Length: 471
Image 1: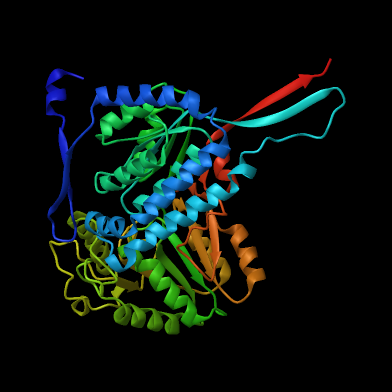
Image 2: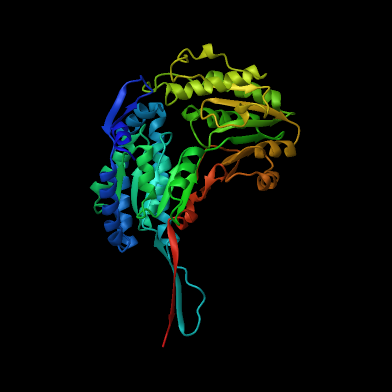
């Protein structure tokens, strides 16, 4: 890199709050000298941390979790100001962090236990799960604690050191982890965080001292990560978003399906990788479902300033994101789609702001990008289908495959359909939820690898075989 280019690199960044467009925080980027210091410290700490018994690691991590939980109110308010989630809902993310962290703490002894084959005379044999080394976690802003905890706690429990690079929209979340781990007594260098530009992030993960990268973000970001580590033989975990589909069968409980799918589509202003973005409804119940869905949307949501306790749908993260969704809606309408929601019902929804009303589109099809490309906003398309087979074909007609949901009273048929749906998680009669006992994984452009569950530890360790002959 030339000196002129180095001089042009940004020295600091601002977190602009979607609440009121104010500067919520401002700080300097870490530079390459900071990267070197952090990597050196991490490599040194890893040698001792991997030898620290799990029985000692667990209490420290449990204490760190308890410390973070004691900050719930402050962390919730910070979330609201950083990314716009209503204060009435923000604390729910901290509860989700607790659920996931406690589950991984609870299963760590079993998940990390040695594998011992059947006895063989004259030999002692086992397979140990050993840590990879230094794990870099690159986390997004939309669920800044829930996406990061998926990697942080199991990585540390497994004996790895962790370097967290969080979104510039939610940098205080990384600070909270660092403060809690320090107060809990984790040794220096075991957990560190950096604020980096994209180019310096690539320098970090390309370094030979980084042994695994856990990335949550866009498909383009995933390609950049893979390219940056391509000269090394290391694995990466990729959670790259989705175009999550739902199918409402003719035998579904329409009231239950509509209520839950509205929430699945519009919670967090639709800014969720596993949020519902497209719904296919059997013709026998299409009209009644659409009417119920639209009515719930009109009457159940108050779009407003997220610091107001009465608000239950806040702004999108930034005006440019809202403008993108507005443009996608207009493209669909221009192509023949119909809007079911009168935007005037949501007075806060205004051009040139991140405040955007929830929208329901009908008369949609797969020639429209609204049904095929990730919108990441408060809009959903509803399409009529005539059979299970048509619904499954349309659900699979996507570059993504994170989650999908089937709404039916026939669980046996749901399982048969689920076998043919290309997604990492298939729900029945629920959606937009992550169970820490199950592997969180995707197919196609939704990524690869998995976090959480017992399987989540396998991506953060490698097997090492011990084959001892007794003389």
